[in-house]
Amino acid sequence: TQLLEQSPQFLSIQEGENLTVYCNSSSVFSSLQWYRQEPGEGPVLLVTVVTGGEVKKLKRLTFQFGDARKDSSLHITAAQPGDTGLYLCAGRIISGNTPLVFGKGTRLSVIA
Amino acid sequence: DSGVTQTPKHLITATGQRVTLRCSPRSGDLSVYWYQQSLDQGLQFLIQYYNGEERAKGNILERFSAQQFPDLHSELNLSSLELGDSALYFCASSGGPIGFSEQFFGPGTRLTVL
Image: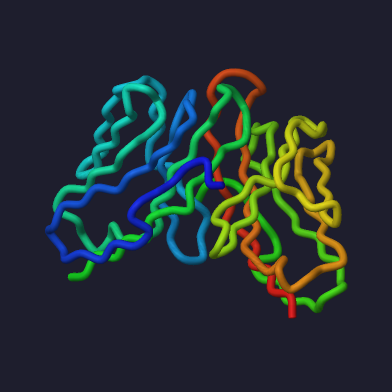
């Protein structure tokens, strides 16, 4: 059983479109992170959210942590080919220097 | 560049063999984590070391072991390799023992078991 479920698994869109990917769990997380991973490389941290209801923006990316701290979403506005990659959410159930639990990811392809 | 280095980049070996993967954390980071990434399971946490001591254990097989040395680099040893061990192995590092800590990932080692 996957603790963090991500949807959709795959997403292929045209340049300029908007999209939202989701990360859901039945467990409460002390914090949640979003990573982007490109082929042949390790995941790179995009953002960390720690407060229920928190919204963070990173240029065209908007991240939201659910009020109950069980889910999160990533919204990309006007997607560009450079946004192509595997988007992973990861959470900590216990705060501190503890291991991350990862979802399986959403593989995004943005076509020019 | 995350500051975390992993060697080798690629490793091809046969079933039944033993390999060692190496990780050097970011300068100043005391924690090292090992993760395995496969297509069907995603990124799975294996084990964490903090300042030389084992801190947490995840889905690590008994055939696998790890250690962190006084200079803080870490090695992951995989023995009696099976076809299913073929995967990407990532090392990540983070800072102190308390409070919220970001993890920074290395570029990974791709292991292929034939």
